[in-house]
Image 1 (spheres, rainbow, N blue to C red):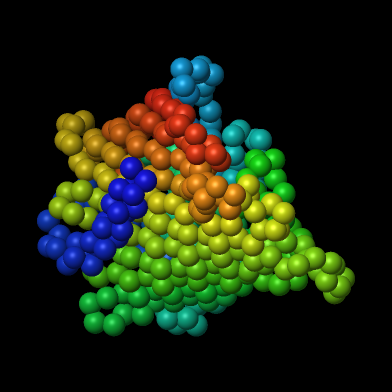
Image 2 (image 1 turned 120 degrees about the horizontal axis):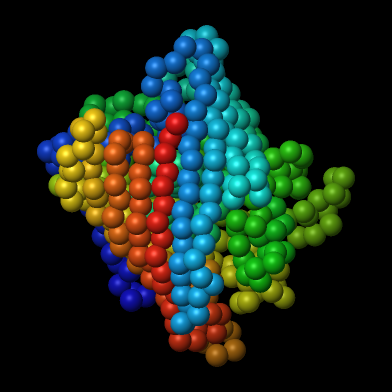
Length: 404
């Protein structure tokens, strides 16, 4: 399975240019779940902005239930309101616009200003952006709203290898070019970057998600920004493929201009796709991470990580419900894997474990494009650092998400 799954992902990614050139025979109401604009525009591609004057407010709600068993042991049934997010948008003249997102996660356990950015358009090919932005590493970090997804849980690669949702203070530019039948988008930003928690955390492993958030309200912890960027290529309405990068120092190696530690960097590279093969919508992401780890912590704390996910969604039937002419029931499949510690033990030469492989099957009901009811069965195979036999975790999830 370890050799087979990466091959599946690579083949799917390679299929994008061919799939993008196939005739568009899928009914428009089914294609509502595939974004009709480039990934770059995800922050504005929300239904509350369909027709507004100067200012608009909207948001989305996400809730779910869980029942899981791991090696025969269960914590029982639980229900949670995962997120309640509020958007605020304002158009200040013809060239300036502001958008922000305030997130209430797990009730009021976490409250965070996830996005607060200003765009100044010089022309469509050059737009200056500043504020709390979403670095464009992969596609999910920009397009993570729950109503867009048919699986209850977010992809592991997008939350553990890429630490989505990743918000950072910074500035940069983005734009769109239109050579012949293609749309090319680019983004490039300087941001405060990740922090020391990548290694110094309660999880006992290298974890990029534990290094985020430190620079939202204060100064950078080392005075050196991180660089992020993405290039996306789209052919008509057939799909999009993107290549992205994120890199910079993460540890506090300088204080008051004096170097107090060795500089340690983190680098991420990702490829993402969105396309269709006949009636099947495909969406996936693959990411690789390289982390400088102190020499006395290596092997236990991974220096290299990688992961991928591939989602396939296909319409099963359209129920006849009065007033819901575009309602559709979809079948859902996700295959995903993350490896938190790529490499071998120097003492034995054996492969280091600490990885998770998962398969999700289910169905979703979309009464309208911006609302989804989800039912999933999830099965995970989990290996520890020493590569011991798989622990198995499996369970059912039911969820709902809607824009408002």
